[in-house]
Amino acid sequence: MTLDWWTLGLQTLNVVVLVWLLSRFLFRPVVRIVAERQQQAGRLLDEAAAAKATAEAERQQAQAAREELAAQREAALAAVQREAAAARERLLADAHAEAERQRVQAEAALQAQRLAAQAQLEAQAGTLALDIATHLLARLPDSLRVTAFIDGLVEGLEQLAPAARQTLCAEHGALTLRAPRPLAADELQRCRAALAPALGGEPQLRVEVEPGLIAGLELEGSSAVVRNSFRADLARLQRELSRHDLADV
Image (cartoon, rainbow, N blue to C red):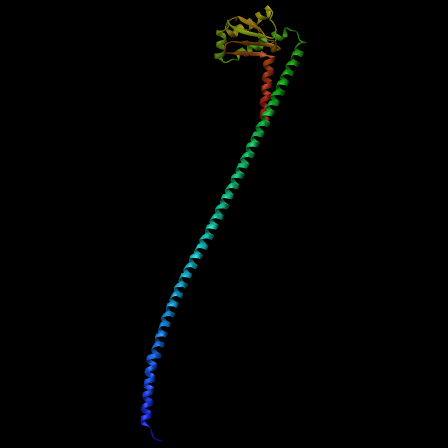
């Protein structure tokens, strides 16, 4: 086999030219295009990464906003619940206070009615007692309505405080003697004589008739009064009964 060096040389030259042409007009544009595409792909990847980072930041912001909104909602709900509880407590306290006030008012009204009824009953009882005493004493001798009470009047005078009795002694010339009926001269003289030792001298008595005494005598000065009468005894008994009734209420 023989080699045709001219043919081989021409073919080699053709290959060299072809490689040069390919490298100049094919490989370089392709490499440039690939490089551009790589750069473009890199830019796209960078933009995608930036977009991803932006989206992640926005997601985190949205998550933080949702969490903050949820916290605000919980805080608002807790505040509303606290306010509702406080309002309920205030309403309950106001209701209790109003109920207590109404109870106190009702008790006060009931007590006032009870006291008014008691006072009315006491007044009726006192009137009835006066009527009974008047009717009973009407059967007794009229003199007993005065003379039987002289000694008791002297005892009441002697039981006065020293200052009050001294005042009456100084006024023995201007004392008032109340009686349930006009006094006879001997009855008036008997009263003067009985009072003289306690007053340091026989007094000049100004007699006043007061049928409401029923029976008894009352000696009155400017600053002291000595009572020994059925009216005074009934009033004292009525006060005692009132105190016992109030103590039982």
